[in-house]
Image 1: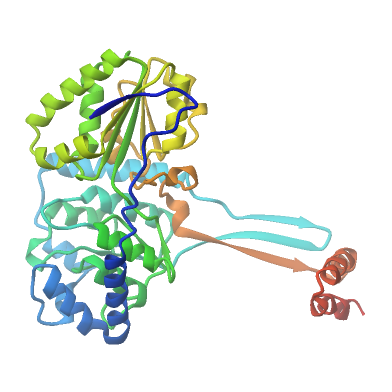
Image 2 (image 1 turned 135 degrees about the vertical axis):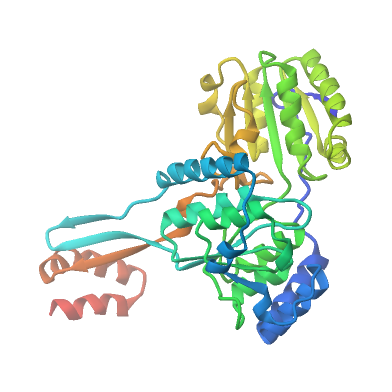
Length: 424
């Protein structure tokens, strides 16, 4: 991890790679989508056999109904069950507060309504392979259910006999309506366009590899998506008051995600930075995911030494990290200055990892600098708003003349006539 001494006003020495700009992958995704549109289930089965590691004989084999999910579940470790139940409860409680509310305005013959309506159907992608991500399912399905979405389906690249029990249990407590055993771009395309077996959805959420990420970006032309998810990021802003061991393990916790993950330390002390890096190297040697984490730390990791915390906040707001850890003595004193971050973790007792599982807020966060303009996933992402307008004759007479004036100014004379006709 390279140490860079940085002062306000200097050029920012860090540039992100755009993981999504890959013409070969974009072309592949479009071909898969076209195939799904033209050939439906037969195309889907072809891609499952080729890329998902199992050989379904028919489309019926790729679907597990809500009732069948319960039948297949054979139990999990008691402590894990309690942990998942706790996470479910806390996620649900927090996300109830994120829902926008409908409202009405009534005034002299006018009624204006802002009507919040849940989406009809959502598809959630849960990565498969060797990793197990029950938390991903909880963080996507529970906000959708809290929002009142009528149907919530899940896709995961798994064979019928390989579904992880923790994921099955999370599907049960999240009230998933069904699981489709499909992955990659073909899963996203099937959710978007629908097949005989897979229903089309209004929105697709959930993380995945670069093929899934690019497929979701292509899907956004047709349905809603949560966001374009790039590699995981953490920026730790430290003043030296938090034990360096805490900071080192927080950096490692993101580096172990992906070799393209971005761990960044910003501190006011060069000696503190050197101590953190020393501990990080020691932790790395004992990490079960050493190969992945090493590439992340040495290829993408950065350490900035700044003159003041305010200079550090300048880096925070330019970088707009997915996760921001304020490892400083009085983190709330600078919180208002930190405008751009997915989630902020305050102080020594708040590791980023607690937010991944049981804190309550969502762990689906904007990456790649998108925290400058995009928010974390919440129940608000699973509703839409409709405006409703009602005028009586008298209220139209009172306001119509102003609308006519503006319509004529814009040269839209039929607009003006639509009002004049009603005022005759």
